[in-house]
Length: 194
Image (tube, rainbow, N blue to C red; front, side):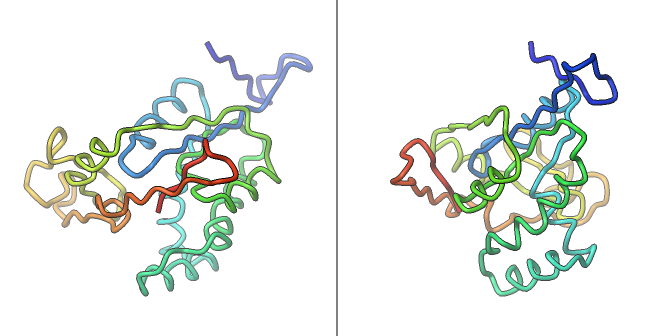
């Protein structure tokens, strides 16, 4: 069992901050698994996707930059993504945390590695066909981030959020055609996805 001691619960010099990241393609279950791990071990849960979505309505500089890329249907550059995620990690400098969905590229991983020493990286390896099936059925309430799966967790009214009744959407990166895997030739064990 993992035993994590937060600084305010310090036992002499034995206090250690625990820093971890969970990686996997869209539909691999990162969010579900991360929340369970964070709750079980008392970690701060940092979802890069949630944080990025919150940056836009908050009108942060990086959020506004991100919005311009999204509106044009372009991938958000690494410097914009790291500009949104890293300040959140800085706010948690005295806490143990689990990072969900960041880094997604080698550049993001290098920036994260230059600032933080991770104790653990969890990589979710899910068969392509399973991912394709999951993503085909995955719909999201954009305002809250609530996720529905038409096969095993459907909304009460098709296409509508259970709580607000607002329409559900499929993010472009949650569609099966977004599952484009790229193997890093310098490090064959590291796979990225768009």
